[in-house]
Length: 151
Image: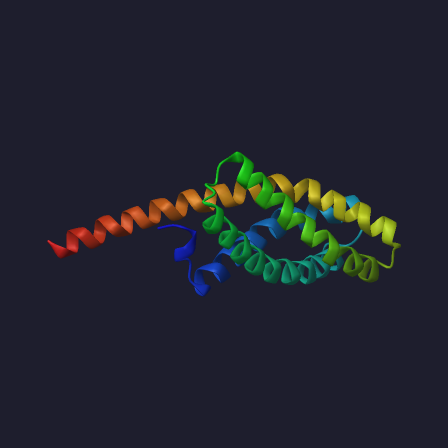
């Protein structure tokens, strides 16, 4: 089972798991760092998460096309390229949102977003690595179960 086997439902599940895990870690940290209430930062995180989930599905579909076209394997270099591309696209989309919601200037919003980037760059790498490995294990287990049923 490889990247081209992903259904829309799995892409939605992947994006939701990615965002839920990130929010559970990031909202309390951002609230403390920005001296804002958890609810206020939580709403911003929810808005940013919605943008990020949509971007996640679009970006991953496009990236997986590149993987197939060029025969890339998800080693460290490709995973790093994936994480940088994903996070770079988010910067362009999320800085204006953060500036508006927090009532701060673009520079402050960019600094906040760079702080998120410092969090999300390794998070993206590790989350996707774990997801891919767990997905492969699940597929192997499911394949073994199907083979046992056929006997």
